[in-house]
Amino acid sequence: MNKMTKVKEISTIILALSVARLATTAIPNLEPIGAAALFGGALLANKWMKYIIPFIALLLGDVVLSAFLPGYGSHFSSPTLIFVYLAFGITVWIGKSVIGQEAKMSNVIKAAVFSSIAFFVITNFGSWLSYNTYPKNFMGLMECYAAGLAFYKNDFFGNFFLNTVIGNVFFSTLAFGIYGFYLRKLKPAAI
Image 1 (cartoon, helix red, strand yellow):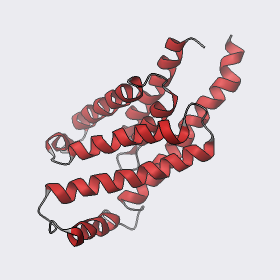
Image 2 (cartoon, helix red, strand yellow):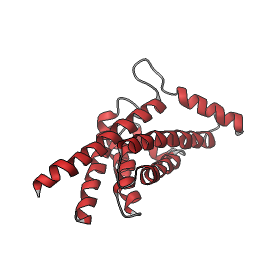
Image 3 (cartoon, rainbow, N blue to C red):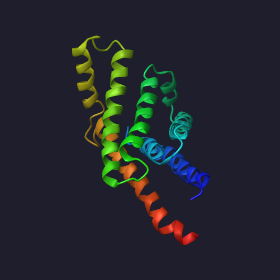
Image 4 (cartoon, rainbow, N blue to C red):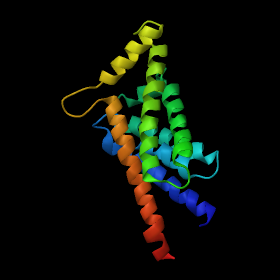
């Protein structure tokens, strides 16, 4: 397969996952953007493109969400934004390291769970560091993590952490599954 064609195909899926965030806004953190980072990290061959394309998709998605959802724009001025983007970069790295170019579904699921845990740990650490809600000591950090597990708990659907895990696993298996099917069944038939 032509390298440029592969980059275009993978980039298209990454951008589609980013745009799909609009359809999942009713349930916070149940988003396909983590899957986009894992997908790019695993399948893009160029070490810079692994990060650049998913980050562009994340940024574009954030801009689009800001245009459609009142209040989402405050996300850009949040002191925790850097931690969200750092966690996203770690997710790309997890895609590269755990899944790799030959994506096995068991590795996709492991990477989706690991990246959800990394996102939770990094963003809650950022929240603890950026705000004066909890004491700046080990116990304060543990309080922040405990509160983070319970945050957005409701009768309808999960919580932020559970939603992140479900979203990452679902959308990652969907993206890798569809792309694998395309490469095995659809693309050879078109040639």
